[in-house]
Amino acid sequence: MKFLASLPLILLWLLLFACKSQIAASIPPTSTTVRVVQGATIPAAERTLQPIQGVEIESTSEISPSPTIERECPPSAGVPAVTHTAAVNISFSQHAAQVTQNTRYLNLTGETLENIVFDVEANRIPAAFTLNSLLVNGSDAPAYELTGREMNVHLPHPLPPGCAVELDMDFRLMPSAIGEGAAGIGGYFGYSQRQMNFGNVLPFLAARQNGDWVIHPVTAIGEQIVAEVANWSVTLSIEGAPDDLVIAVPGIIEQVGDGAIHASIDGSRDFAFSLNTGAALASQTTSNGVVVEMITFEDALVPGENGIIQGPAHALEAASRAIEMFSDLFGEYPYDRLVIVQGDFPDGMEYTGLVFVSGDWFRSYPGTPASYLFLITIHEVAHQWWYASVGNDQAFNPFLDEALATYSEITFLEEFYPDLRDWWWTFRVSTFVPPDYAGLPINSTVYQFDAARPYINAIYLNGAKMLEALRQDLGTDVFFNWLRRYAEASARRIVTPEQFWSLLSPLQLEAIAETRARFENGE
Image 1 (cartoon, rainbow, N blue to C red):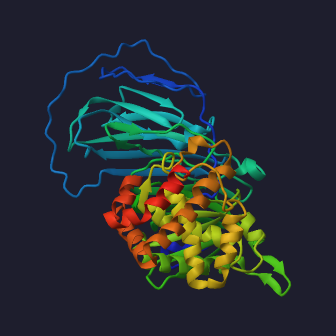
Image 2 (image 1 turned 90 degrees about the vertical axis):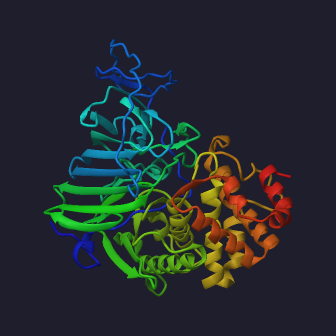
Image 3 (image 1 turned 135 degrees about the horizontal axis):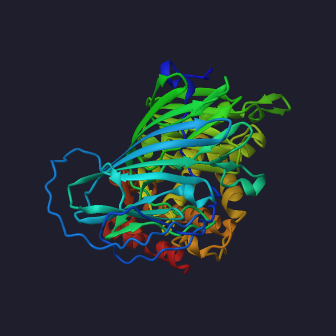
C-alpha cells in the first residue's frame, strides 16, 4: 500500500480536517429509543425520551436507587477533563469501520453525577451506528438509552467531584453513499467512488451547563452541537486500502504499522478524518510554523484561457496567508497543522484541524480571488478560531461563530486584495441582504428558520453587517483589540453572547447600544 505525502516521516500520507459549513444541513434523527438495562441497580431519575428510529430493546428488570457512596479520589491537578482513545479498523471495500473507544471523564463540575451523556452524531442516520457493547469501569453499564444523537449512560455509583470514570464502547460505523447536489449536504459522513469521510462520528461527551447535559434537537438548518474540548488519541487501520490512498487526519501523526497510523490532538472539539483515492497532496508552511496541507482531485484543475487554472495552489496560498493574518489579529493558531480536503459534497464543513471545501468551488474557480473558492476557504480557516478554539452553542447562538467567520472573509480581502472590498459587500452580502433587509435578527436560533437561505442571510450576512457597524462605532483598532481579547479569553471554552459583550467597557457599550439594538431586536 502506497501513501502519498508532502512531509517527511509520518506526515507522508495524512491530512488534517477542520472546518465549518456555509450551508451545513443536518440529517433528521432516527425515530426509536433504544433502551438497554444490563442488570445492575442504579439511580434512575425521570427522563423524557424522544422517539428515534431503530431497534427497541426493553427489559423488565426493575431499577431502584442505590445508596450514595462516599469515595475519595486521587489528586487530579493537570489531568485533562476528557480523554478519548480509539482504535478505528476500516474495511475499505465495505465502507465500514469497527471501533473500540475508551473515554476517561474527570468530573470537574462541582456536582455529584449519576449519569454521563454522550453526543453520538452518527446515530442521526438510520443504520449508521451500531453499539455492540458499553462498559463502565470495566463492567457492563447498568443501563443506557440511545435516542438519536443522545446516549444517556447510567453510572453504577454516583460520581463525586474530582473523581473519574472510564467508559468503553465497541461499535460499528456505516456511512451512506453521498447523494447528488443538495442531497449530498451530509457528505462529511459518507462515501463517493473516490472519498470516504468520517466527520465527527466518534462519540464525545456532551457539554454540561447549569446542571444539565446539553443535547439539542436535530434540525435541517445549521449545526446544533455544543462540544467541550477533549484530548484525542486515535489509531486508524485500513483493510484493503488501494495503493494511492491519501488519508486526511488532524493532529500529530506517526506510522505504527503496515496500514496503520496514530493521530493525537489535544484541546479538540471533535475528531474527523477522510480517506481519498487518486488525490494529490500539497503542503506549505506558514511564517509562524503551521503546516497547511491540501488534498484535491484531478477535477480541481480546470482549463482557462491561458492554460490550466491552479485552484488548489491558489487556495493553499490563501489559507496559509489567512492563518498568518488571523494569528496576528486573533491570537496564535491553536494547532500545529491544518488539513484542507476537497469534499465530494456541497459547500464546506469545519472540524478541529481539518476542513472540507466543496469540489464545486474548485471546478467553478475563475482564477481570481473574487470567487467562492477563496471566500469559503478563508471562512473555514477562520472557524479554527471561531469554533475550534472559541466554542459556542451552535443551535442557540450561531452568530458567535458564523458571523465572525464570515466577517473574517472581508478582513482578509482588505489586507491582501483591498480593491475587492466593495465587490465582497455586493457579491456576498447585498445581493441577499439589501439595506432594507427585514429578516430575523442575528441572535435568532437555528430553530427559527425553515430554509437555509434565510438562515444564512440573517446569521452569516446580517451578522457581518452588524460587525461592520460595530467596527464603525468603536473604531478599527478598538474593534480588533476587542476581538483578540475575546478570542484569547475564550480559548477552549464555550462562550455566550453575554461574555462576548462583557469585554467592552461601559462607555464602549454605550457607543454601540443603537447598533446592537438594531441587529438584535430588528429595530
